[in-house]
Image 1 (cartoon, each protein chain N blue to C red):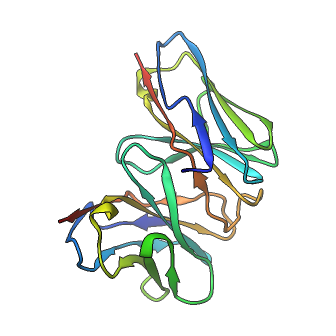
Image 2: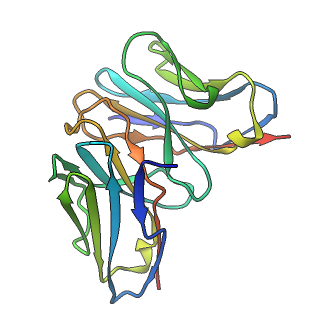
Length: 113
Length: 116
Protein backbone atom coordinates (compact mmCIF):
# COMPACT_ATOMS: atom_id res chain seq x y z
CA UNK A 1 0.00 0.00 0.00
CA UNK A 2 1.13 3.52 -0.73
CA UNK A 3 1.85 5.75 2.23
CA UNK A 4 3.62 8.91 3.31
CA UNK A 5 4.98 9.57 6.79
CA UNK A 6 5.86 12.92 8.27
CA UNK A 7 7.20 11.77 11.63
CA UNK A 8 7.16 15.17 13.34
CA UNK A 9 3.90 16.95 14.13
CA UNK A 10 5.86 20.12 14.86
CA UNK A 11 9.36 21.41 14.23
CA UNK A 12 10.77 24.41 16.09
CA UNK A 13 13.75 26.29 14.68
CA UNK A 14 15.42 29.56 15.57
CA UNK A 15 15.49 32.21 12.87
CA UNK A 16 18.69 32.01 10.84
CA UNK A 17 19.28 28.33 11.61
CA UNK A 18 18.92 25.58 9.01
CA UNK A 19 15.65 23.70 8.97
CA UNK A 20 14.65 20.19 7.95
CA UNK A 21 11.14 18.80 7.63
CA UNK A 22 11.16 15.03 7.22
CA UNK A 23 9.18 12.87 4.81
CA UNK A 24 9.42 9.16 4.06
CA UNK A 25 7.27 7.30 1.57
CA UNK A 26 6.24 3.89 0.35
CA UNK A 27 5.03 3.32 -3.21
CA UNK A 28 5.06 0.31 -5.50
CA UNK A 29 6.44 2.07 -8.57
CA UNK A 30 8.63 5.08 -9.31
CA UNK A 31 7.56 7.93 -7.04
CA UNK A 32 6.51 11.43 -7.96
CA UNK A 33 7.17 13.48 -4.83
CA UNK A 34 5.84 16.92 -3.92
CA UNK A 35 6.08 19.45 -1.10
CA UNK A 36 3.34 21.96 -0.39
CA UNK A 37 3.07 24.73 2.20
CA UNK A 38 -0.11 26.09 3.75
CA UNK A 39 -0.19 29.44 5.51
CA UNK A 40 -3.08 30.25 7.87
CA UNK A 41 -6.37 30.84 6.06
CA UNK A 42 -4.80 30.04 2.70
CA UNK A 43 -4.79 27.17 0.25
CA UNK A 44 -1.83 24.93 -0.38
CA UNK A 45 1.09 26.35 -2.33
CA UNK A 46 3.35 24.13 -4.41
CA UNK A 47 7.01 24.35 -3.33
CA UNK A 48 8.88 21.73 -5.33
CA UNK A 49 8.72 18.30 -6.88
CA UNK A 50 10.92 15.33 -7.71
CA UNK A 51 10.10 13.32 -10.80
CA UNK A 52 13.44 12.05 -12.05
CA UNK A 53 17.03 13.20 -12.45
CA UNK A 54 19.13 15.11 -9.94
CA UNK A 55 18.40 14.01 -6.38
CA UNK A 56 18.63 17.58 -5.06
CA UNK A 57 15.63 19.62 -6.09
CA UNK A 58 15.40 23.38 -5.63
CA UNK A 59 12.07 25.10 -5.20
CA UNK A 60 10.33 28.30 -4.19
CA UNK A 61 11.33 30.63 -1.32
CA UNK A 62 14.83 29.11 -1.00
CA UNK A 63 13.61 25.62 -0.14
CA UNK A 64 15.21 22.46 -1.46
CA UNK A 65 14.63 18.76 -0.98
CA UNK A 66 16.81 15.70 -1.36
CA UNK A 67 15.46 12.50 -2.84
CA UNK A 68 17.05 9.42 -1.27
CA UNK A 69 15.89 6.25 -2.98
CA UNK A 70 17.58 3.82 -0.60
CA UNK A 71 16.03 5.49 2.45
CA UNK A 72 12.78 6.27 0.62
CA UNK A 73 12.96 9.81 1.93
CA UNK A 74 12.34 13.28 0.55
CA UNK A 75 13.26 15.72 3.31
CA UNK A 76 12.60 19.43 2.88
CA UNK A 77 15.45 21.77 3.79
CA UNK A 78 16.38 25.42 3.93
CA UNK A 79 19.82 26.76 4.91
CA UNK A 80 18.56 29.75 6.89
CA UNK A 81 15.04 29.88 8.33
CA UNK A 82 12.86 32.98 8.31
CA UNK A 83 10.01 33.76 10.70
CA UNK A 84 7.80 33.98 7.61
CA UNK A 85 8.51 30.29 6.89
CA UNK A 86 6.25 29.40 9.82
CA UNK A 87 3.41 27.38 8.30
CA UNK A 88 2.03 23.87 7.81
CA UNK A 89 4.03 21.71 5.40
CA UNK A 90 2.69 18.69 3.52
CA UNK A 91 4.61 16.02 1.67
CA UNK A 92 2.73 14.09 -1.04
CA UNK A 93 3.56 11.17 -3.31
CA UNK A 94 2.10 9.46 -6.32
CA UNK A 95 3.41 6.50 -8.26
CA UNK A 96 3.31 6.80 -12.03
CA UNK A 97 0.37 4.47 -12.52
CA UNK A 98 -1.97 5.67 -9.83
CA UNK A 99 -4.14 8.76 -9.90
CA UNK A 100 -4.26 9.16 -6.18
CA UNK A 101 -1.97 11.71 -4.54
CA UNK A 102 -1.12 10.36 -1.09
CA UNK A 103 -0.61 13.06 1.54
CA UNK A 104 1.42 13.08 4.71
CA UNK A 105 -0.25 14.22 7.92
CA UNK A 106 1.53 17.56 7.81
CA UNK A 107 4.25 19.18 9.91
CA UNK A 108 3.79 22.50 11.63
CA UNK A 109 6.97 24.54 11.30
CA UNK A 110 7.53 27.28 13.86
CA UNK A 111 10.41 29.70 13.36
CA UNK A 112 11.21 31.74 16.46
CA UNK A 113 12.87 35.16 16.23
CA UNK B 1 -1.90 35.87 -5.34
CA UNK B 2 -3.22 32.47 -6.29
CA UNK B 3 -4.08 31.73 -9.91
CA UNK B 4 -7.05 29.62 -8.89
CA UNK B 5 -9.90 31.79 -7.64
CA UNK B 6 -12.59 30.46 -5.34
CA UNK B 7 -15.80 32.18 -4.27
CA UNK B 8 -17.17 32.77 -1.76
CA UNK B 9 -14.35 32.81 0.79
CA UNK B 10 -16.76 32.05 3.61
CA UNK B 11 -20.20 30.45 3.59
CA UNK B 12 -22.60 29.73 6.41
CA UNK B 13 -25.64 27.67 5.55
CA UNK B 14 -28.40 25.73 7.20
CA UNK B 15 -28.90 22.03 6.64
CA UNK B 16 -31.84 22.63 4.33
CA UNK B 17 -30.20 25.27 2.16
CA UNK B 18 -28.89 24.92 -1.38
CA UNK B 19 -25.70 26.78 -2.26
CA UNK B 20 -22.85 26.55 -4.75
CA UNK B 21 -19.11 26.98 -4.52
CA UNK B 22 -17.30 28.33 -7.55
CA UNK B 23 -13.76 27.90 -8.83
CA UNK B 24 -12.06 29.52 -11.80
CA UNK B 25 -8.64 29.13 -13.38
CA UNK B 26 -7.19 30.77 -16.48
CA UNK B 27 -3.94 28.84 -16.75
CA UNK B 28 -5.24 26.52 -19.47
CA UNK B 29 -5.13 23.57 -17.09
CA UNK B 30 -7.08 20.53 -18.21
CA UNK B 31 -7.63 18.81 -14.87
CA UNK B 32 -9.57 20.31 -11.96
CA UNK B 33 -10.14 18.94 -8.49
CA UNK B 34 -12.31 19.42 -5.42
CA UNK B 35 -10.84 18.65 -2.01
CA UNK B 36 -12.22 18.81 1.52
CA UNK B 37 -9.85 19.81 4.30
CA UNK B 38 -10.44 19.67 8.04
CA UNK B 39 -8.34 21.87 10.31
CA UNK B 40 -4.66 20.93 10.39
CA UNK B 41 -5.28 17.80 8.32
CA UNK B 42 -4.22 16.97 4.77
CA UNK B 43 -6.77 17.57 2.01
CA UNK B 44 -9.11 14.72 1.05
CA UNK B 45 -9.84 14.25 -2.63
CA UNK B 46 -13.52 14.45 -3.57
CA UNK B 47 -13.77 14.78 -7.36
CA UNK B 48 -11.52 15.04 -10.40
CA UNK B 49 -12.49 16.49 -13.77
CA UNK B 50 -10.29 15.69 -16.71
CA UNK B 51 -10.93 17.53 -19.99
CA UNK B 52 -14.24 18.74 -18.52
CA UNK B 53 -15.50 15.23 -17.80
CA UNK B 54 -15.89 13.74 -14.34
CA UNK B 55 -13.19 11.10 -14.11
CA UNK B 56 -13.04 10.40 -10.40
CA UNK B 57 -15.64 10.48 -7.63
CA UNK B 58 -14.17 9.35 -4.33
CA UNK B 59 -17.47 7.91 -3.09
CA UNK B 60 -18.68 11.36 -2.10
CA UNK B 61 -22.26 11.61 -0.75
CA UNK B 62 -24.81 12.79 -3.29
CA UNK B 63 -25.48 15.95 -1.29
CA UNK B 64 -22.32 17.20 -3.04
CA UNK B 65 -22.77 17.61 -6.79
CA UNK B 66 -19.91 18.81 -8.99
CA UNK B 67 -20.25 20.54 -12.32
CA UNK B 68 -17.70 21.66 -14.91
CA UNK B 69 -19.40 24.13 -17.30
CA UNK B 70 -16.20 24.73 -19.27
CA UNK B 71 -12.47 24.20 -19.05
CA UNK B 72 -11.98 27.22 -16.77
CA UNK B 73 -14.84 26.78 -14.33
CA UNK B 74 -15.69 24.25 -11.68
CA UNK B 75 -18.71 24.35 -9.39
CA UNK B 76 -19.69 22.35 -6.35
CA UNK B 77 -23.41 22.34 -5.62
CA UNK B 78 -24.40 21.75 -2.02
CA UNK B 79 -27.74 20.54 -0.72
CA UNK B 80 -28.94 19.18 2.62
CA UNK B 81 -25.48 19.20 4.16
CA UNK B 82 -24.70 17.89 7.61
CA UNK B 83 -22.74 19.61 10.40
CA UNK B 84 -19.82 17.25 9.78
CA UNK B 85 -19.51 18.73 6.30
CA UNK B 86 -18.17 21.93 7.82
CA UNK B 87 -14.64 22.29 6.45
CA UNK B 88 -12.41 24.18 4.05
CA UNK B 89 -13.24 23.24 0.46
CA UNK B 90 -10.31 23.58 -1.88
CA UNK B 91 -10.27 23.69 -5.64
CA UNK B 92 -7.12 22.79 -7.55
CA UNK B 93 -6.02 22.49 -11.14
CA UNK B 94 -3.14 20.85 -12.96
CA UNK B 95 -1.73 21.27 -16.43
CA UNK B 96 -2.31 17.84 -17.86
CA UNK B 97 -5.65 16.13 -17.99
CA UNK B 98 -4.38 12.66 -17.34
CA UNK B 99 -4.85 11.69 -13.75
CA UNK B 100 -1.43 10.06 -13.50
CA UNK B 101 0.28 13.29 -14.43
CA UNK B 102 3.51 14.33 -12.74
CA UNK B 103 2.47 17.97 -12.85
CA UNK B 104 1.81 19.74 -9.54
CA UNK B 105 -1.63 20.85 -8.53
CA UNK B 106 -2.29 24.55 -8.02
CA UNK B 107 -4.74 25.35 -5.26
CA UNK B 108 -7.13 28.18 -4.57
CA UNK B 109 -7.49 29.66 -1.10
CA UNK B 110 -10.66 27.73 -0.48
CA UNK B 111 -14.16 28.33 0.78
CA UNK B 112 -14.61 27.95 4.50
CA UNK B 113 -17.99 26.31 4.92
CA UNK B 114 -19.94 26.21 8.16
CA UNK B 115 -23.14 24.17 8.46
CA UNK B 116 -25.51 25.25 11.19
